Each structure stands twice: as C-alpha cells, then as structure tokens.
Length: 303
Image (cartoon, rainbow, N blue to C red; front, side):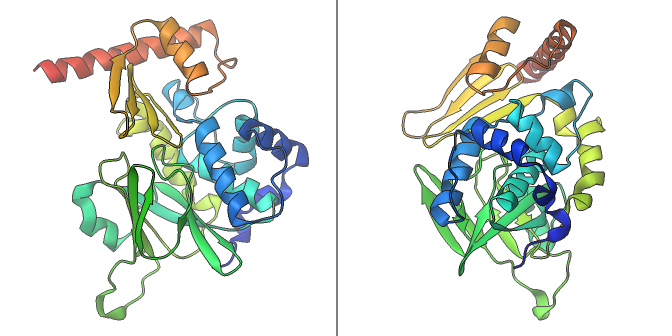
C-alpha cells in the first residue's frame, strides 16, 4: 500500500500544531518511525484524547479537516472517528510514517454478510507500513484495540480482549473497489465488525457522511451523548448519564451520574475533555438534553 497523498493534510500543517498535539499525548520525543513508536503513539492517543460527540449534541459539529482536528485535540477536545483517525493520520504523516486512509464501515454482529459485501463509509480506517510490516491502526473506535494489529489474518490477544482480522471471500475472484479488503472483528464491542477497502482514500471521501452523521436525527451521534476512553486494562464509557467501566479482569461496573456537577467533573477528569469552550448556557443545554434522553431510556427499560 502507498500513502494517499491527497489525504495527507499533516504535510501542510504547522510544526507548532503538531508539537502541541504531541504534548497532549504526553510524548516529547516521538523519534523516527518505528513499530515501537507507532504503538506508543496509539496507546497515548486512546488514553488522552477521548472519543466523544459533545459538540454534535450542541448542534455545532466541527469539520473533519485533519489540521483543524489536530488543533482541537491540542486544545483538549475530542471527537469521533473522522476527527480522531483523520488527525492521527496527519500527525503520523508529519512524523514520517507511511499512512494510508481507507473507506470503512461499522456493522453489527448480525450484519456479517453486509460487511463482507461492502464498506459503507461511516468509518475512516488506517493502515501504516513500517519497513516490510503493515499494521491496522485505529484511534477512532472508542473501545477498539489498545495497540495496532498486524495487517494479516489471525486472532490477536491484547490483555483480556481478543480481536481478529480476515480477508473476505471473493466471489469468482472478482475485484470490486467498493468491496472490503479487510474485516476486523471484536464481538461484544460497540463496533463488533469493521470492514474497510484496500484502496486509498482522502478526507473528501468522508465529508458527506460526516454531515449526515453529525446532523441527521437518525444518527446515533445526534440522538445520544457518548464519551469513551481506552487504557491498557479496559474501557471507560459514558453514555448519557450512565458511567461504565469495562474491565474483564476486575469486573465491570456501572453507575448513574446524578448531578450536572458530577457529569462535567467526570468529563474533565476521567475523559480528559477540556470544557473551557462551554458557556453556562451550553452546560445547561447539554445536561438537559442528556437528562431527557436518560429519562426516555429509563422509560423503555420499565415498559
């Protein structure tokens, strides 16, 4: 695979933006491209830059230009896959890594056949080549792998979590650009199946889908607030007002955040989301929206 230069916005970004981005990741000296360096960058990204849709919930979804996302991350914000993987790819470009962006799609466990037939375009996937080795790299799934996966078929264990990569079967050996080149699986997660095409993609390939995901009333990003953060042992998840910890070794926990003060304190501490961009009106609006959704969810459970 070769780097998709049309999507390599990191090459035009300022050094200051990427230096601030690296400070957010807690990495002062990233060094020359290496597998060790790539793994360290992904781990830091998942720990320090949350998967979240706060701005979408407030009706002001940020664009997905990678340099814009890099500046937002440097300022303490988060985002969803188009922001997270878009900016991460640009940072890796800036650091000299050979990165390829791919059109991908997230599917339910019941949609195995659909995932094998095509990649729907609601996910930006990344692969990185280092020497003769290639890796599936993803900082934009929320509860995906803590470290890159070798881009070859097989099952991979990371701590208490198991992931797999496979090649979908080709009917009569035919090649269609819309068909996936790879399928990733993580049963039980929020993204149990991800398929992605082999062909390189650019930021422009995701613009229309970003508009739909960030504005349509049918989109899960519009309907419900979510924040996720990954570390070596597990995943912290805030969906609406329900805070969960997924930790197979110690056991999963769940509790409801009862007050706006607790909600916002959790976002700033546990999820490392800087909230200095929120006005008092923003805070009231978001808490009201989250509470209404929470009460509607409770009603469905009690029905």
